[in-house]
Length: 55
Image 1: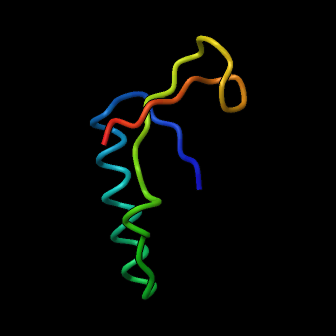
Image 2 (image 1 turned 120 degrees about the vertical axis):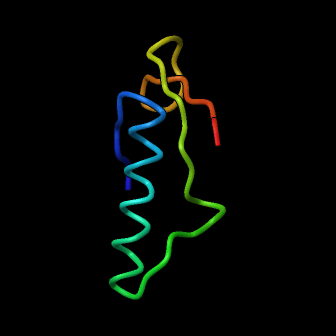
C-alpha cells in the first residue's frame, strides 16, 4: 500500500490510523516493511522519484 501525504505530521497520523484499522480487522503491519519515506521529484530512481527513508 502506498499513501501520499503532504507533511510528516500527516504521514504519522495516517500511519497510526491505518495501524489501528488493521488491528480492528485482526491484522498487523509488518514492522520491517512499513515505513514512511520522503520522495522528491529530482533525479530518476523509483518511478521517477528519489525516495529516502525518514523513519
